[in-house]
Length: 158
Image (cartoon, rainbow, N blue to C red; front, top):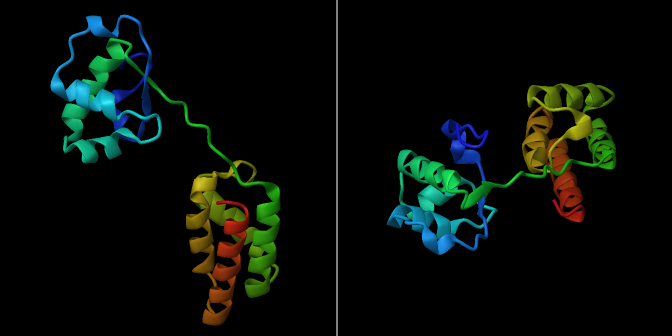
């Protein structure tokens, strides 16, 4: 564990470079330098490993060394959550296809995903809509539901 970071699960983590005046005083090998050049604060380590053609063991070791040198730091992801209005619309659309049970179905599906309606992450909305659409037995209603939800997500910039 480095700086309170469990590097065993480093693949999903995102790092960025730290500006230091004494950067030229460090000796970096080619792997560390390659990783440092690719860090953009947006892509996770697993994505960088694929882009650089490295396996997770070697990239993990290099990330640990960069962390110890305090040349990089972890980016704390700010999770965007869906607004309550989205769930109102979702419930209305699902009610058209399934009736009054839709509210319970939404809550159960959100719970199955390990989340709460009040803090549901935007990045999981497509999975939620897909799981709910699978519950709709009538094909034409399922298609209409999906189309309306995709339209709403586009309107909201999701």
